[in-house]
Structures are given as structure tokens and as C-alpha cells.
Image 1 (cartoon, rainbow, N blue to C red):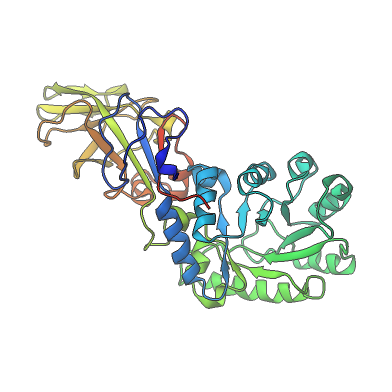
Image 2 (image 1 turned 90 degrees about the vertical axis):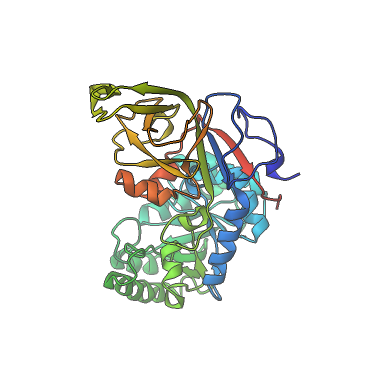
Length: 390
């Protein structure tokens, strides 16, 4: 049985043959329908693995797989061939371990803090240690963790983004007092401007990473090196090292412009009403009709991750653009359907899909595709399409 044979818990529509490339049939309820194409996620991983050359492409599935559901996404990625995984928090790693079983290496970007002990215990997670504090906390916790011997850990080097990572001085201190009870299996850093291929900061960071990683070679002679996420993968072989870490590109986001569409979000028209020229729509009366107009109401709003200050956007009905008018409220948005041929209640409007990618929607509301994906709310009826179990 594939994931398409079942509907996510709480979904409002029954199992059916579903195409993610067309609006679903009219719903039995008012809830918008979020369809996730698991086969597209697998295809995107395979494409990024091909772009990674001799390096292994891992899979970053932090933040509930960028808002799309960690269990079905992780299984689809494993079926596609992914073998190494990254999350942000230890709690995410423990959840992923329950999905994938005991074999897959699962790295925790945010390292190890004393409060992570319970999440790490028995989950065989690999913390990416980013500071002397992380190292000391992890060493002190080892007797309680039940990890393999020697326990694996990664090291995060600061190379120019100035977030997490060991500075040169801290690298020197680590070399002077090496944590010999640990197997350092990964040395990584993160690019600040990878989505800007011509930015000279990329080469500077690569140079800093290479030099600082070399200082750690005696401490971690078998460690794999990793610098590039999705953007770094696309910068070419100089940025691949041993392991790439694609994230947003798996889910159809820029800068991987060749990605297959993953997310399809449709909402039914709850009501279609006629208003006269001079009448206003929504809270504050911020939009006034200049002509007799037809207004459609959709049942999603900022409680569903649709940004409150959105304006100047189009959604799509039967492939035709429908402008967003009036303020976004908690549960509703309104569209100008005046130029549409007789739209009816129940007709499905495309919010995300072939006509509007996550990045196109993001540009219209002044944010990024990352934020659109991770803001998708829990009230959608979710459908998972394709994705043979792996």
C-alpha cells in the first residue's frame, strides 16, 4: 500500500485516486486540501544526488519535514535512496528514529544541551557539536545515553555566517584537549550566500572551512566534510566535499529551479456574492469596488499560515488569476472573481500548485519559500500522493 491509499488523520475527504496536478474533487467540507507529492520529493532528492557528483546527498527534514509531515516524507526519501538525515532539534531526531528504525544516521544540527538528554537516550542520534559548551555537556552525558562505543558526534565550524560553530581559537583549544572518547564522524559548516552564486562570500567561506577543517584532521581523520545545503550543492564540485545537505530543494523551493512541484493547496469557495460599485470588502474596508463586482470567499486565513498582510496576490481558479482583495482574516480571504465565468460555491481555488510555486507566493507577500512551507497550518485536510514505502 502506498501513502496515496490513505488520507492523513483528520482529513475531510475519503480515499480516492488523486492527482496532485489538478484540483481535487469538490470537498465534503469547507477545509482547504493540502496535497503532498511524495514521488516529487523522491525525484528531487535523486536530482540533487546527481548534482552532488561523488558526494553523498543527505536529506534535511527538520521542522516536520519543512511543514509537510516527517513520517511520510522520511519514508519517501529513504525509498528514493537517501541514507543520511539531518534535523534541527533532538526531539525531532527521536521522532525520526521511531520512523526510520535503527540504521539511518540522524544528525542534530543544534548540537547537544543538557536538557536534550531524554530525547537522545536510546535514539542513537549524532549531535553536531558547535561550541566547547556542547562538547563538555555531551561528554558529561555519555554515561546516561546508552550510545554505541565510541559514540559518534559531528563538529560545526564557523566559517563566516557567524551563527553556530567553533571559532579558530576554539578549534585550537579543542585540539589541545581532544574528546578522545568520541568518534568525530562529520565536520561541517554552512554557507551564508549560497543562493547568490556570484557572491564572493561563498569562496571566502569555502577557503575558511577548508583551512579550519584541515586543523581538525588529526582529531577526526575519518570525518566526512560537508559545506553545501541546497544552494551549495548547486554551486558545483568545489562545494560538495563528502556530503551535501539538501533541504528546501527537496520540497520544490528555490534556488533549485528544476525541482518538481511538491505542494498543492486548494481551497473551496464558501460563498460567491455580488456587490455594487462603491461597496467595500473585509475588515477596515481597505478595498472598495470600482465597478459591480463578484466576490468569492475562501475558508483559510492567517490561522492557516496565510500571511495577514498579504496583498497584491493572485490565486487561481481553473488556471485563471483571481486577485486577493481586502484584508486576510483569521479564517477567511476574499477574491475578486468579477472576470470569471460563473464561479460557484464549492469550486476549488489553487493557492499553491502548477500556477503558483511556494516561492512565487512568497515573493507576493514579501517573504521566502521556507517561511511559506513551514507556516502551513494544521487545519488543512492533508493528502499524501505516491511514495512507496522504503
